[in-house]
Amino acid sequence: MTPYDDIASAASAPLIDGFGRTVTYLRLSVTDRCDLRCVYCMAEHMTFLPKVEVLTLEELDRIATAFVGLGTRKLRLTGGEPLVRKGMMDLVRSLGRHLRTGALDELTLTTNGTRLTEFAGDLAAAGVRRINVSLDTLKPDLFRKLTRGGDVAKVLAGVRAAQDAGLAVKINAVALKDDNAAELPDLIAWAHGQGCDITLIETMPMGEVEADRTDQYLSLKDLRRELESFWTLEDLPLNTGGPARYVRVAETGGRLGLITPLSHNFCEACNRVRLTCTGTLHTCLGQEDATDLRAVLRAGATDAELVSVIRGGIAVKPKGHDFQIARKAPAVARHMSTTGG
Ligand code: SAM
Ligand code: SF4
Image (cartoon, rainbow, N blue to C red; front, side, top):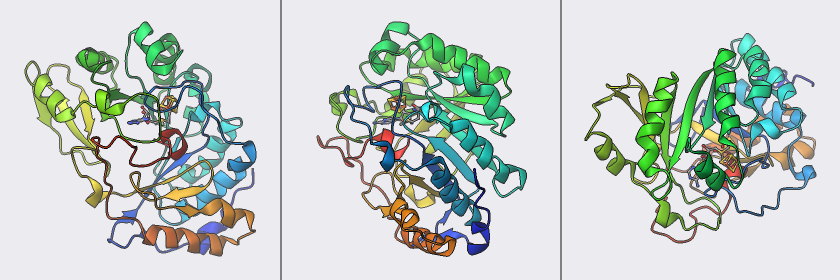
């Protein structure tokens, strides 16, 4: 893979949007494909993108490197399922060079964990130190239902493999009123017992899926109140620049993050942008704003031209999002698997 490091010289001043926020965090979706079909994320029969529409590994590397040159300190690879992308480890190894030069603080990924037994060692060797593993339930039957066919044992083995390889694992769970609400205290206690932080996420209205999300919406404010009836939750000042609020559960000693995109507005401090696997830059998860970087690359743009288009996209980053679960239609038509969670 060609390192596109010359692009760093075409970049210099950091990326600052029209509201004075500095963008330092890029989430890069490397594929829209996945080996699971989580009910809140995908339709049962998804039509995946033709290969030609998806950025090549070289294009992903070039854009990511441009962002690193523009002051991005944290890069998260996501999807779809990043570990099903062919050649994924080549990309991770290649991007790892920015860690070694000190240009990047963190290279990480969000995964469903099914292939971690195979890849945890390679990830650690490439410089990855922490990963997020999505896991909504420990119950094999419920896991199979929520993921439409997945095997929770694979994910649990993956979490162990990651820890054995020296990776810190954070568990992400979507809070679903009917399906896992009652199990969440057990899931939190289990994660803390494994030495993992855990973050709970409210369902977001992203993309058309069969389930009616208004039925599954569980307010984390209400959940927090319930947890406080038997646990002591101590607020932590930890600020990740993201939408999570953190507490320590005194009884387990572990950290719990609560992401409430619907009931809490976190946009003022937003430092992140997303790139879809088709090369579209979205500067807000909940808005339709978009800049097509793939078209720019494939038109033969120079590094300076690419940087200029990125700056233009960042300049118009919207002030904030506007999710309301009460709406039946999704706030944003694109699926989370395309945008990258
Ligand atoms: N496949 C990987 C995984 O599941 O971790 C990475 C991509 S996935 C789209 C990233 C995260 O988005 C997952 O934690 C998933 O639970 C979350 N997610 C997907 N659809 C969602 C929705 N409608 N609301 C809230 N979170 C969602
Ligand atoms: Fe796949 Fe992740 Fe979406 Fe589940 S949440 S279907 S694992 S991309």
